Image 1 (cartoon, helix red, strand yellow):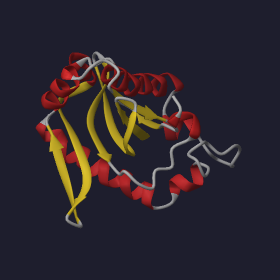
Image 2: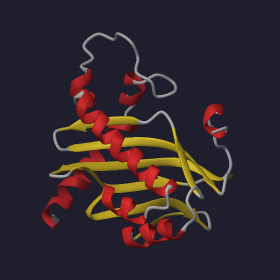
Image 3: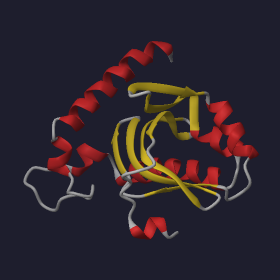
Image 4: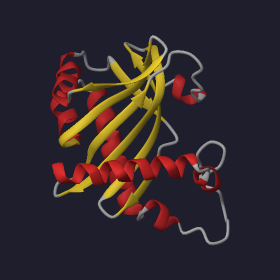
Length: 187
């Protein structure tokens, strides 16, 4: 697995360049939905099969379902071995990345009351190529039904023998400037 990390990081940077290049804006509409029509657009080449997209989405949903259920082992079960959980943030005006061990995160989830941790998601975009997938997941997080913060989860998933597993999840967090759809905020 360690020898794959440089290749995965290379892909991550290539994917970031793709998003930054405006290709995403050409493919998706203003709110992340797919544009209709559009010439030579090959949906399967950009997103993978419908079956793979649904399986990736099921893994994403399983993470947040486990959080709501305060199921620490359910959280652990959606992550690949050696997975990373990162937060891209600013501290004292300087950008930094914070790493949280998966086992510590799962223990924290497992010690919460059922229903206390509610991460609500919308406009999930999934791209699949072979055994690699990426999911862009806007979210709003509620603790004990009170809004805490919002941001985006950028997930990389790999297809394993047991199904799709999260290899890396990097999130952003903010308390202001959140553009939460009305129906998500009222869940």
